[in-house]
Amino acid sequence: MTIHPLSEGAFTIDKTKIFVPFDATKDDLQKRSVGSLLVEVQPFAVTTEKDILLFDTGLGFTTNGELQIHANLKSIGIQPEQVTKVLMSHLHKDHAGGISWKDNAGNYHLSFPNATYYVHRKEFEFAITTGFPSFIIEELNLLENNPQVHWLEGDGMIDGYIAHETTSAHTPFHQVFRVNETGQEIFFGGDDAPQLQQMKNKFIAKYDYNGKKCMELRRQWWQQGQVEGWTFLFYHDIKTPVFSFGKNAG
Image (cartoon, rainbow, N blue to C red; front, side, top):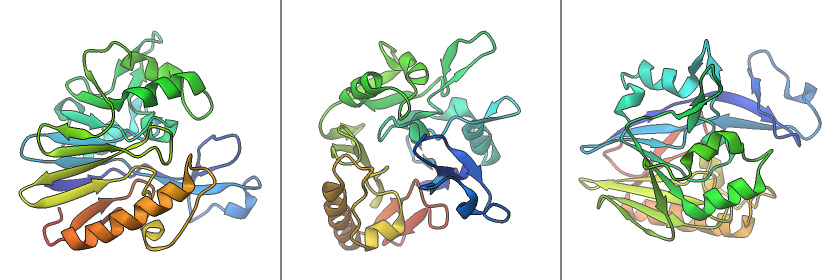
């Protein structure tokens, strides 16, 4: 398997939950509004023998009319039409903003026209019910009754090599994924396991649905990953997007 981090950059976010681009070379965090957090955003593409997988879809920001995640994929030689599976950990707007795009007539289209989208059914229902500012309903509505969407519930396997597990940790129906191919194990924990540093330290976040469970799961996954040689993908860690205990990381 080959791993492609698709960094969208760093942002600050305050109680308004608006993502504002942040450039560490010229911006001062102290000049942002009180309580601003620095957040990095980074989906992943993973090329396997069967698929081109996409783990979460980024913020959905555009540059010159093109989705940033499309531009990032093209920069590594992958066309959006080549993505075969989109695996969604949850539907917060910084993870699901690139699920769809809006044309000049105001109509939404799925961003990856040939892909199957794997979404937790109850996460979708929760997102639609909760709405703004954490979820952008207009970007998600296209999923409902769409033949490209495969609804997940509970735990299980996709095509015999991708495991999905509902954790109910960062959000009530958050899920994580493990991909095992030819002995290489890749783990994507979404916002349950967003950064390398959080894996190494006990940390309970107030923004998690169940912060204690998140902390306990991170410790469990870290220990299991050490024993089994996992490769971790960190969505909110641009400095260390990939960390591997194994020998065959892409």
